[in-house]
Image (cartoon, helix red, strand yellow):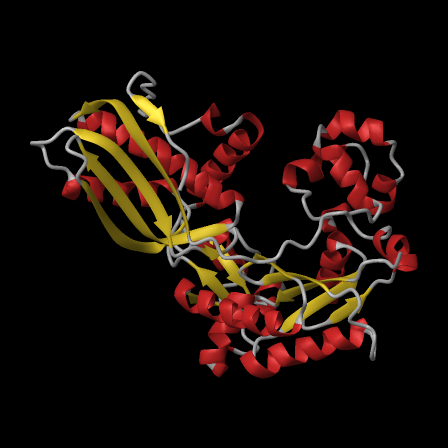
Length: 392
């Protein structure tokens, strides 16, 4: 059975490149996309800014100190999302199986596309088509699975390409830092470094049982990636239009505090799901059904976000406008829509470093212990009054 041919495509400094399409004067200059205040966070930066030590998710105050000559741009998620959609359409026209991993990343299964002149040349042609039709620089890696192809892309940047055939997988991976392995965050990295593990080769040669004791369930996945093993399939991209939830009450109510609590819990769960999927939304919709079964909805736009506090504030505004104090409420629901792909830091144009770290900590707890492990203060569950319904 022939080996898979998996490609990973990544738009180079996507937000910066998108801004340079509109303003050629930005080429060759240090650019930072993010909030203008000192409490803001870097969402993206150019390679010229990275030379000064600037990186994504860095506090804006530190970035200004490291690179005072940088040009700051607030960022435009509508523009970036449209460009991302254009790139996806180009890729889907050519490739047989495409998975959109984020706003600027795609995985392709191009097995069998080498019948005429080779898979690597086919990928080069696709890369040049994206550049020709969009003007955006893009890099790709080509190998036997998702992990190796993604690492190869990182090693080929900027605007490069790299193929790692099956016999060369371990020689390619082993000299690299463990930082290069997808899924190793700061906590895992420091844990492994404390054990004296610096390079992938050392990690790959560790006993799997020992790594499992240290890293838990994630240990096996990390060990497999270090050894170039990754059996995950390419999952075709289908855009999910919305994420929502609703609650029907066993006892109809006019208790506004109770309604706010229910709304808050649903928003927290929805936002957590968005962040797990690397999604952002631009529209919030609230639904009310009264005791006479009349149903009313109202929606409003928000800046692209996946943060509870932004969506909850808007949801509460809509609830206040919908609520008729003369009638008992039978059901309340909330939905987010106009979803786009984007890593969590995409919506950090004005958010503070402290807020970002808070959400990251909460998400980490929820990931390991479940959605109900931690929540916003003041949110109480009244299971006597709530009859859960499936998410829409």
